[in-house]
Length: 165
Ligand SMILES: Nc1ncnc2c1ncn2[C@@H]1O[C@H](COP(=O)(O)OP(=O)(O)OP(=O)(O)O)[C@@H](O)[C@H]1O
Ligand SMILES: [Mg+2]
Image (cartoon, rainbow, N blue to C red):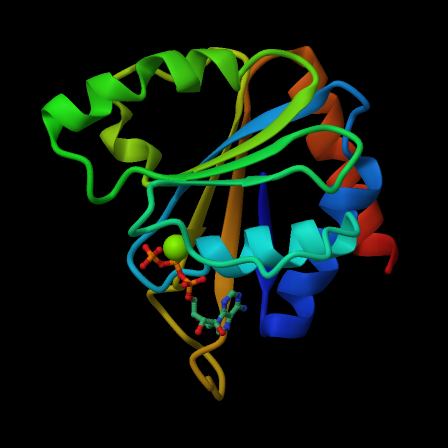
């Protein structure tokens, strides 16, 4: 399932659709995409839409940011800087934060060495390779791969909401 975002306004609209339809038990989201694809930007828009008041920064250096201002805990990982050994040190946290009742995002999920919860939503952000019209560099394609029925249902709701707004 793919959604085209032509600019930041579209990405924000998609983040709002995510926030509006977030299941009450939360979600575990693995984010894929190159440096600068928009992973942190997308998470920031979602957290703002959920009413998080704290400053939302990239977890690239600190590996994990936690936000407790929402009705469930929110965890935002970035695995990019973790070496193989480092990944092992966060294995327990990843398992803990994939339980129901939390909202967890993992940037650079590629480096997780198979430690992620099965029941997750994979989102890949890609720059379109062929740009057929005037392009200001803000185009992104969001590819959703939901694992499990609940995530499939969630993605259908996001799509419907995005297209209706
Ligand atoms: N449609 C769009 N969606 C998301 N970001 C966009 C879009 N258009 C332009 N941008 C810009 O692209 C940049 C994305 O940076 P961001 O830090 O979110 O990327 P990232 O995927 O988290 O990278 P990293 O792997 O380094 O953590 C931002 O400067 C953002 O403003
Ligand atoms: Mg980032």
